[in-house]
Image (cartoon, rainbow, N blue to C red):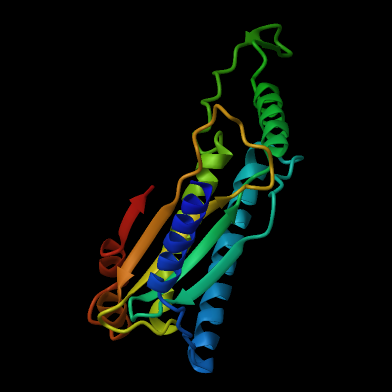
Length: 228
C-alpha cells in the first residue's frame, strides 16, 4: 500500500511539472528602463514632499517635536510583459507611533498654554475679562490622517506627471499600488489590517493630457481609485 501511495504521489507531481509553463524571458529596453527609473524618482520626491508638508503642519501645533518616519519610501516600477502597461508599487513610510504620542502630548500642553487668563487687573482697579480665544481650526489634530491625504494628493499629481515620462501606449494603463510601509514594527493584533490603494489611469487619458486635449483637472477625474 505504501508503494502505491508513493507511486501515485510521484505521478501527480510529475503531471504538475509537465503541465506548468516554462517561464519566458521578458526584456525591457534600456530606454524604457530609464523612463521607469525617472518615474520612480518622481514618486519618491512626491512622498518626500508629503512628509515635508506634514512637518510644517506638525510644527504649527507642537513646534518642539519633530515627527519621525519608520523607513524610507520603497518604490518599484515594472512594465507588464503582455502589453498591459506599467505598474508601480509604492510603500509610503509610516509615522513612528512613539513620535505621534510625543507630538500629541506636546500639542495638548501647547493648547492649554494658549488659554487666556480669566481676568487681568488694570491700573484703574477694574478687572477686564478677555473674550475666550476661538479654537484655531487650522491646527493639525490628526497627523496620520493628514499625512495620508498629503501622500494621496502628491501621488495623484505624480501619476499625471507620468504623461511625459512613462512609456504607456493608448491601449495600456499606468497603475500605482500604494501600501503602508510599516512592516518593520510589531503590529497591533486588534488593529485593522493594512489596506492598499490602487490609482489607475488609461494611456489614452495620459496621452490626451500630454497633447493638451484635456485639462489636468479633467485627467484627474479620470483616475480610477480602489481601496482593498
